[in-house]
Image 1 (cartoon, rainbow, N blue to C red):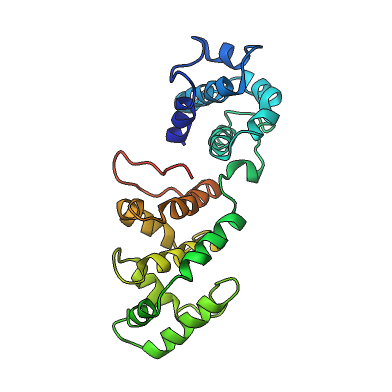
Image 2 (cartoon, one colour):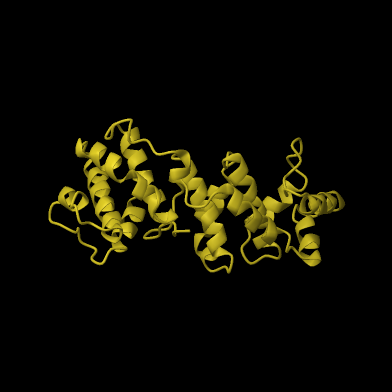
Length: 249
């Protein structure tokens, strides 16, 4: 969250606050949108870092909410995540409560088609390789289940099935560079988005493969999916490599 607020601040003409007084900048009558976003981010960053409750925050929310909701999605989500953090920690009034969609950069319904399309690019040779990933066990059954999964209109695992083909898909998604890794990772992310990542599969892949994923052509779509998980669940907070933050979608 702090890194996202700093990114918003950096969108301004100057990375320093507009005025020496952060609140004066936010309430300056002539402030334009280009200056408002970094000014609000500067206020929120200060309040979060110092764990301060300020009554002026309610005035900021009331005065600028329509404008903040109309900002580009990454900026809007970054600012709203900070408002929600302050509210949950009793540092902002209940009136400063973002809507669920305020907190999200990319919507699930926009991410699903991208991940489904990439998963369906799985080649026949990749299907053969993936089907053998469980140490050569139940190859025919895994292959048949994988083909059915790819043909499913929603590309969703059968509700009562937890092994075929999920086991081989998850195994290959652990192996950057292996045949079928990228489409398997797309399937893992698709399932995690729908389930809230209750098994921690997406969290694990991000923690262990961040740098490899960053080098993929699909990195923007994959990182957008990871960011959705982070923005939709305040408790979803993977441990990333040092000096690395989740990119903006």
